[in-house]
Image 1 (cartoon, rainbow, N blue to C red):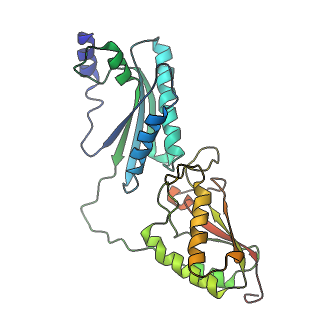
Image 2: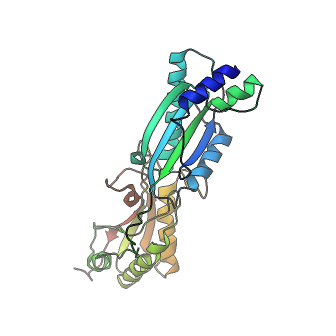
Length: 283
């Protein structure tokens, strides 16, 4: 067994020599299983939450098995484990475009430990390894980031009539959460003021999410419920109400990922309002 471990380490050390700038996480599985255990999923979600403020270049996901089972079986099982982790990333608003590698490596003993218990060694190798590579900061010039300015949305509200749908493209949400980014607060305030002035319109606030599979809703990391699009619409509803907009004029609705915009996935973390009734002020 010791000779085998040394041989594998030499063979694969060049492939898995990770730089200090990369973030890694390992998820462990039960024997012959590719369903993620609850405790491991919770650890993974905690890791995903640390990626909120990181500009990600790529994510690699590699599945492994222990030394039991035929080679073909182990390759299939390790791939299924990698796919299971990819699905969790997607359902928590991590864009699939960032996941550049998803592969099953079969039976590869990567973890070299001072351990004689074969069962423990096998347990350490029933896993998926996740490697997150951040984008390197540009050092040749300094870019000053300024809060985005909403172009035309206030005017659209002032001119809106029944049936209009208005996209708040600069109201951006934190990944996996129903709260907006700090830069979006000022824009949201100006929208609320415009809606106060147009007290003749009634509207539905529609919440959306990005990146989930099969038009599913995303997981709300705050409540652990899969209702993130609804929670985002409710957040905006409550904010408007706090600014004095009559609740009788509003309703909120979660539309999951039924209507992706395409392009940068951050813009699918959005809200829109659909004007359901309009008076004569804009006619």
